[in-house]
Length: 196
Image (cartoon, rainbow, N blue to C red):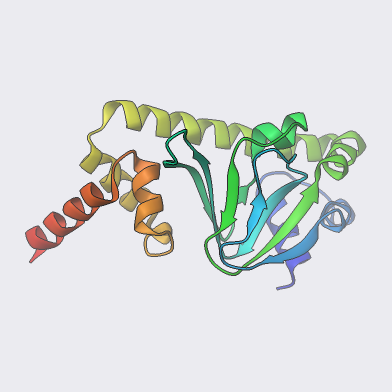
C-alpha cells in the first residue's frame, strides 16, 4: 500500500469522511526518510512537523544538567511523534527526537495542519481525537510511574507494548521506565531465571 493510502486508512479509523476528503487530507503529507541516529527535532530549533511513522522507530528524550538522558516517548510503525510543545506553540524545542532505525515517515507541517483544520471540521475532529488519546496515554504513564514498582512498570510495558520490545535499546527503555540500565538488566535476568 502506498504511503498516502496508509494515512487515508488511518484517518478513516477515527472519523467518517468521503474519499475526496481523504485524498485531500493525504495530499497535505509528504514522505521523509531518516537514517538511524539522525535527529528530526533538536533543542533550540522549532519543530516544524508532526510525524506519522510508516516504518522504523524513534525516541524523544531530554538531557539533564549532568548529561543524563530521560526518554519521554517512543514511536514505531503506526505511531506519531514530534516535540509537541514546540510544534503546537511554534517555539524552540526542548527535546531531541532521534531515529532508532532507518525510518520512513509521513509528515505534515504546522501551517498545512492549520489549513486542514480550517478547511473541514472533520479534520479538526481527527486531530482532537489523536491529541485526546495521547493525553490519556501520558496520564496513564504518569500514574504508573507514581504507583508501580520498577518491575511492575517493566511488566506493564512488556504486556501493553510488546511490539516495542526488541526495537528500542535497553538504555532507552530503562530511562523511559525511570530506572538504570543495570537495574533493568537485573529484572530481565531474574525473569528469565524464574521462567527456566
